[in-house]
Length: 323
Image (cartoon, rainbow, N blue to C red; front, top):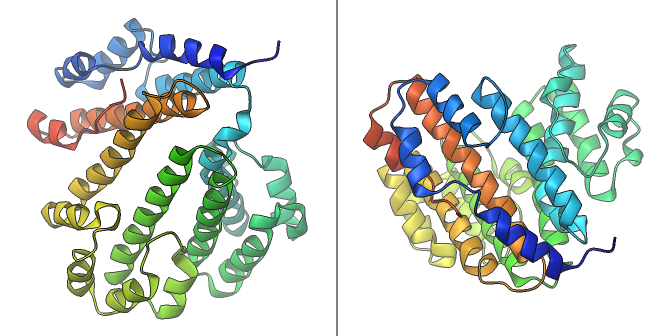
């Protein structure tokens, strides 16, 4: 059967009705133990399992199985899967270095088979990897083996991932995909800069870690980062790009408020573009992003229950949902 976006959109619109609603979230907030939370998700048909992790794993597998069955061109998800590739590479690299293989940590789906990643690292055959990763993988291997600097190793791989996300996002006619990844990478850079401002890093590290993206003032951010967190936040609060000024105001309230602001901004972009779309891949991407934000909401509630956090504090941390 040849799939069309017309068919896919009709299917995903019906499926959206099963996404979590505000009333579902309020119900989850009423529970005082994770067993009741898991039972609620089971009864709702969200996923099978005795624990939240099991339920979310089964739900994730189910969502990807569904998307593969309806999307005409699965490559529209490749920009979103790059992070899984680089996560798996790091697991393999650090597992080999430590002598502890942690294959249970692998994430799926991905664009690079884990067997290829393992062979590339174990035998230093980095040419087996796609062009966007091979040089960075080799560099990361040298860093971790000779300098034992895990932070710099991660920075090199993460930058390669961000550059590939941007490159892939340009290959689609969807303005939303391009705008989404420009926003995502912009704020990834901001997070890197803020973290780096609190530690001893130099300009060389920041150049290796920060990715060139539309309207990101890389040189200015590097200069400000090297002067410390207060100076950096003052500099960033002057930027209007991607609502950066408002994001920094949130950060000054708390780092978690900043993370919430960024997540909410991204999902609002999806709601505005994907919910209104009547053709193309956007509705399918919107459904996927809606599912991803649901997972964050469930994790936040579960964590709050485990730590006996006040319900109002948990509520303040919750992300806006797509449903």
